[in-house]
Image 1: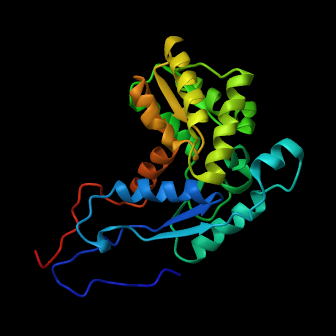
Image 2 (image 1 turned 90 degrees about the horizontal axis):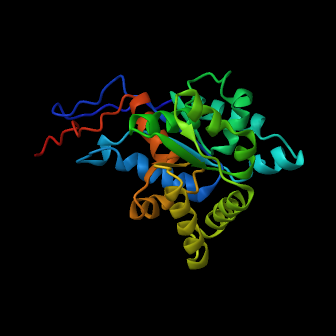
Length: 256
């Protein structure tokens, strides 16, 4: 259960309606980036202005890609158990910081005891709100095969330009490199920029970072005149709203 901690100073108020976020992390760098974006979305003057967040970065959860591509252990039971463990500790809303895992959303998200946000729905919704018209999702190999982003994009009336096999292979390489090293090397960066420029010339106006390892592509998209919608950022914004945290900096310091 969540510890009951109340402010002792009469000049401080903590909203009783504010929830606690539970974060299921299956890859360390992506989860750290999610938390950076989450906290960056709160205008806080003191530490206590930030929400309570319970984070379980468990790299031992079975690989989503290997399950989907090779038939290895289904990670759904482990993800579902982690959500319930976070709920038992006080989480009132959960997120899973992995786009590929959402292919299996029905196996861990639908029956959870607390609400669970769907990163694909939140990302596509953000793209639409930003005025996207022609969109390309950059996603894992498994997610590209499942075409969840493509279907979600078209379901809201946007046009989707999908990658060919060679370009998809490059995106997979980027994801693996960032998983291991936390960043792209210069050679891969040049190849990615060439891909983004080719998409722009095909009329694409918006790129979806449909893998939580791809947040760093935003600066390259900006350089080339493309809108970039980061799934990490979209999920973080929705998570803050979902636990009732204001991003307007209303938390006060009584000493000021």
